[in-house]
Image (cartoon, rainbow, N blue to C red; front, side, top):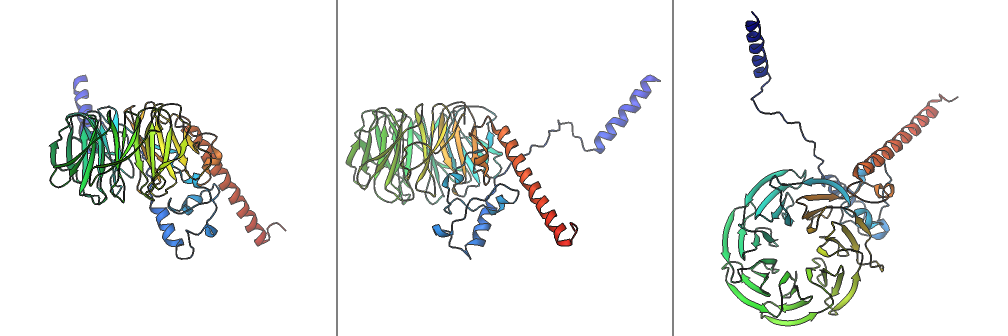
Length: 438
């Protein structure tokens, strides 16, 4: 009798489970992701540009105060504001980690910014959603660590390089079209396209920089002059001018069309880790080094114009803002991210994200609209940072990913208090208009 009762209850359990649609797999709790949508600022910009000259300093609007309706009045980053610091992406949004954890060497948004691509030390390319930052797909792209990743200016092609000197061509759908072995057979740490996308440069650990034809994959020139590894390469966005940074503490300039050598800067005291041309004005060159300094060069005068101090460790990554020619960001060996403005006389950072990562920040990538920053680190994670809501920075004493929850509580309490005060004022006004106070 007891066995029969067990059998009936078990049958009832199975029938109820099948009725609910249970298929034998563990049911996971839904994960809530916080998307960062740029649609509202763009729509607000299209609305206001009809009535205001948004690029005129006299029409600049002050930053709205903190309330529940202020975020609907935010304009895109490319619109000038009275306080440019409010547009810096210092607000922590999300962390993404591969299932097979390993250091992330390079990171880049796709040209249309729908996805983010990361290259790992195991040779894998991972695609993440650019809106809600969720995982999309992963593929084994190289047999060794991926060292460089670069998109063409037209956005139709991407090239990657690895520790073995192999360069591969990719389409936006991650279809590998072509690959070839370079003569160096050593790590290629820097890739740069010409303004026409017909040529590209590759700097490698054999102290050479080679110019290749993009269509035929044939080497056209070999630029020799560095005495040690070439750490980074960047092609001028408008002219036939190439800048290379080396482990021998120097920055050299070349004419890639003729192979002529133009000059050398010996301003750093240690390895030059990155060199970046300003894509907006074209005459600023930024360089970072292991001497904990960042230097700004003006190519019109061909000399250094500013030295930026503030890092307490080796500076390993830098990136210019995609729309504002006066803003750039840097990351160091201790996992700190610092923001800088070139128009300020004080050569110190305007904002700092303390403890952004637990390891060295290998690469930084801006969203094409400039409202999101992505950082890749040796701690095997990538993190996304966005602009703060209007007035939030005034409520936070310091910016840290560890204090995120405390900051969110402070902000939410302030918004709730402001909203309650506004509701009380509106109720009092309605009472007075109806004569209830008499």
